[in-house]
Amino acid sequence: MKPEILGLVPARGGSKGVPLKNRRLVAGKPLIQYTLDAAMQSQALTQIVVSTDDPVVADIARRAGVAVVERPANIAGDTSPVIDAVRHAVQVLQQRGQPALQGIVLLQPTAPLRTAGDIDASVQLFLKGGLNPVCSVSQCEDNHPARMYKLGADGHLASLMPELASLRRQDLPAVYHRNGAMYVFGQRELALGTIICPSMTPYVMGAQQSLNVDTEFDLLVLQAVLSQGAETGAAAV
Image 1: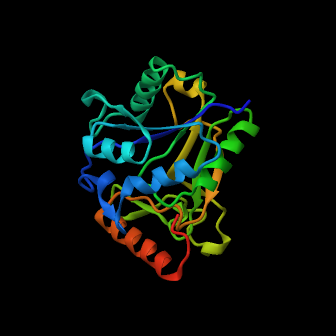
Image 2: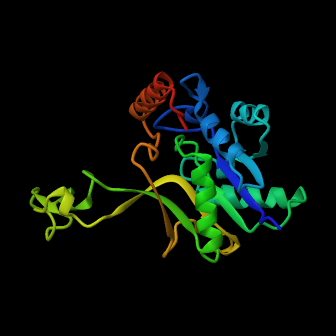
């Protein structure tokens, strides 16, 4: 029997960095549509739901054939933890008769270049790993923490990793950055109220696929990437 895996897309209306971010048009489509398209092409997800307080985003989801959970204002603020939206959505789905979930895949619209294949592969890691949470990451290159500094009390730069600061980039040990594309977790994490947890299984993605939209500049980069894909005939997502 196929496991019940929910694809949950959190898409509140407010955003300080990029106003109305989730519905902004990029290469002719709302930003959230790229995530919806990937989710709908996934073979692993048994249901897809958008959690939002924005009626325009809700309309985009419904026109795409995706179910919507209307998120209350008290869990849709700038400082509201996303786990509250997850718990609320799962509770609403249970009230609607949703079968017991084995896993939840959190798909943030700000990571529009993840593919259906990425979703399916991360779910397989979750299931084969005994339901250990999975987190999508990308390998740090020039943004390696060995090349980062903080300001000391004297106002001078202090290396975060002084023992590695003088090494060439190619000699640095591999470290990974959470790219926000996918978090796969189960009922245990839901009960604990945590998505980021110790000992997560990594799902490694490339740098371009890991593009995360947090600023207007990120939107410009995404537009360029998608336009280049259209010009070459390559798949954008």
